[in-house]
Length: 333
Image 1 (tube, rainbow, N blue to C red):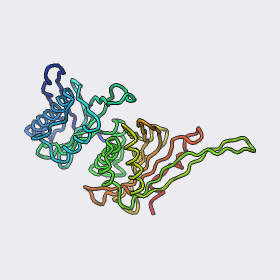
Image 2 (cartoon, one colour):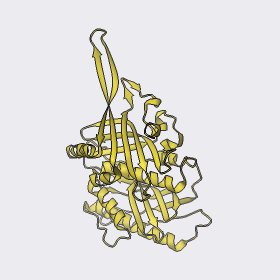
Image 3 (spheres, rainbow, N blue to C red):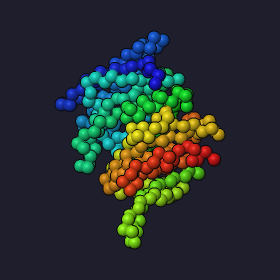
Image 4 (cartoon, one colour):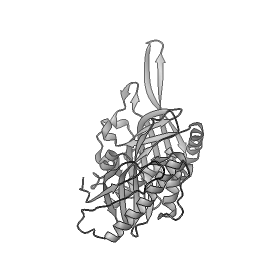
């Protein structure tokens, strides 16, 4: 993986007593040609203001007040959506992170938050990593929860499959896709699935043979279009008090797949297949399995998903064979 040249140090000072102390952010860079100290100071100040407001709102158990914050409308909406589903705060005294300079700004990754979901089924506290993007003026343009550190790192191994800027965008939209489920955000999912989207869901079925006394397990597949899938998902959102979705690189599960699960179409260079291991946990149901997403980046700023599949990790007590897991080659035509 390419050595990431930018490192950031967030020095966070806060107290949860009578009032909330300001969160102080310091960004240091080791990149020799990145010496815009004025811009770094603006980013530090802007992120510090937002983190301070998050901690204050958490302490007071209130809505966020983002009026006048150095954020664009999109990042405000993303942060507000997260806050409406779960409250969190930044509690580390010092966070050392690796970041990445982007063509139009900067990305800061792995900012640690403590989440305290209001549901006894969750652990009392959970660690959640977050990302913040800045534009060239230092304004915050995106605020999102991120994939785990290892999964994000595997995307960096994809230089031979996809260029850096596109790779970071794939990672960004995969993160937003996952977050939409956690936030029960049907509006985002409505936008991200193409009108002709195909959704395939596997279900393990066991059949008992009375003559032999042997049970055999197999997978049956249900196909849905976009309208059918989102209608079913809407009911699932209503039934469950909380939904938590995690993605991880499938290599951790023993599947040897190049480049952390990203493949590029031979027929259309704007189409990418992304295979991930998914953990789904909700107040009424949980499962683990493989998710395949066929992304179309023809519109760079509004990529869409044409295919989404889910398959169980185990079938009849045996792990699903690698060759049976859906991939880009299954949908190339």
